[in-house]
Length: 95
Image 1 (cartoon, rainbow, N blue to C red):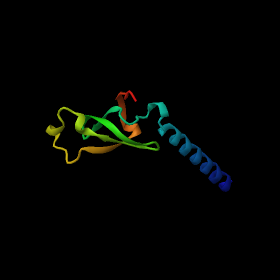
Image 2: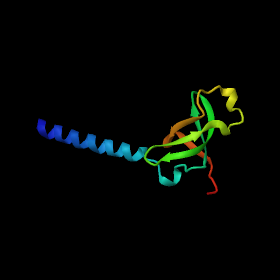
Image 3: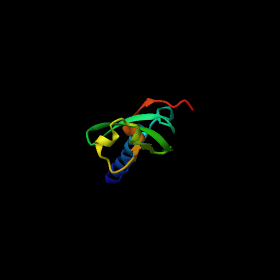
């Protein structure tokens, strides 16, 4: 009986993990491409950036200097990496 419960628990855990992974996946049509403008929150601030490169698996690299108030933020960087699940697409590029 204990082996049966252990086995059922392992199957349930594997199933739950697979469900969570599927839920975390972002649909391809919702991923940004190079040239798209995205918005995201970082340290409580709403930021905007243009995508300069993509990693289809999990993230984009984007350039923050398109923001009119970029210099007012006093960032130590001009580019940053954002996970697909952490941004929204504001405007698609015309490419």
